Length: 292
Image (cartoon, rainbow, N blue to C red; front, side):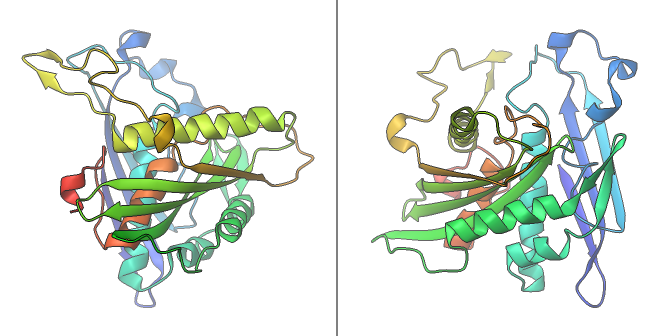
């Protein structure tokens, strides 16, 4: 990932460049650009950046992987949303603005996605709902020996489902990260099965935290070193945070809710870590050595 932002004299974000290099998913066979439908144009989370920036450039370079590759939950969105949402917080910090306030400024009007028009006010509404329910801007409970912070991140999945997370995180003196609470707000059209939706959020949070805090693939002597959960750990039940889910009432048709909760998890945590420690996270998995 390589991101750049341009600011004018009054502190407005007027230019944004998002460059992304990724492996082709060889599970689908040889790369064929003509086989990709328009809504799947890459980079996901880059070309469909939801923010109102007058000069936007998104670039994607596909490279063939030397090893067999497959999809993961929410495919290309996690790395792009991680980079975009963390970098936007860096811009907010440079401008001396609250991260939520900067997002508010950039969410007026609408933007095109494929053959649809996406209303940014829907994303603004879920951001406000998540922030309100999480107590954004209020003091956090003290945790002796630990530094605490909140972080926020959001995304519009394929121009349909609008979702935001607020993460409440603490970091120990040795750099160990503990995620205590995730507050989620979503607008996915009419909710048919609320328990099913809540389950998707909880599993999406568990998956998102697993790759943010633990998941890593290492190549040693030309092959993948990890072979099972003994050396590729996922989130354990005692590490799972409290998850609170809120939805925006809607009479519009359901718009999907499977992969949608995953992409904003890691950036919400990374932004909370900065709020707690003043240290930026620019890679995953998040390492204690970088935060001690």
